[in-house]
Length: 351
Image (cartoon, rainbow, N blue to C red; front, top):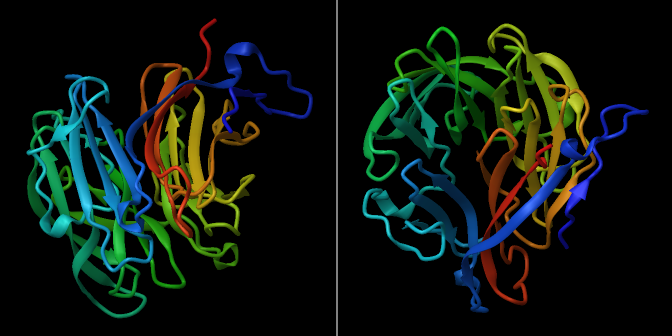
């Protein structure tokens, strides 16, 4: 069930103005598969909409518990009406998981392929590894793969990955989320001073193990200069948490629990000042907004109620709007009606 709007809660006595209400403008199905075969599930969709009006989509097929969930790449030159082969991104062994394109100062794009390889070290660190990076100089149409060392990680040398888009800092550095998946899982931030040629671990974004898992940090630098990180702490159990840094990511504090559980929280600050977040579980996908840099949030708005991975991909469209792409797909049991990758435009009405 889709809800068209939600009243923004910014204080006990606040009254939302119409232009402050998070609103759904449009919903389109990009890819659909009406087969009842488990192998035809669709998960982990990532979309990049380039300025040259090409759309580049990656996703995975296969059951959640399958030994392999091959990655797929496709592109559209007509706003998602039709899709064709995307020859410019070659996947080794068909593996991608989730991509987060990041624009650098020279206007090129980079992203990383999950997970790090060549991990070595001792439990608790220091651990080193290799990130498989991809760079594009033609707005995502073609990509060149290269390897980047990652050093100083306080993780066991097992499952470790960079996470999310890079965050541009005023001194030219980029900050990247990084996490381990081993229990206890730990989320942190890494930095690069050479545009993604090498990375060094900087700091943990949350040291309190009582919140549960600390994974999939969504990080954004606010217009105030403060950084916030919103983290997954469970799939259907622990609520997401938010932490803050006022020293460019070197230390984090001010733990804040949010309203709901969520995997893969995706966070943006729009040019109108609103901070928006999308997140999900295996049973829904929701969104919230904040007008005070994440201190208070609107009531969750429902983008989808039903099975899926809960993962989403976001991109700003204007000062007042953004889009989210996600899957409506069988997860625990076969879902009647097949599987879909969906794009929703949402944001705030103009004055």
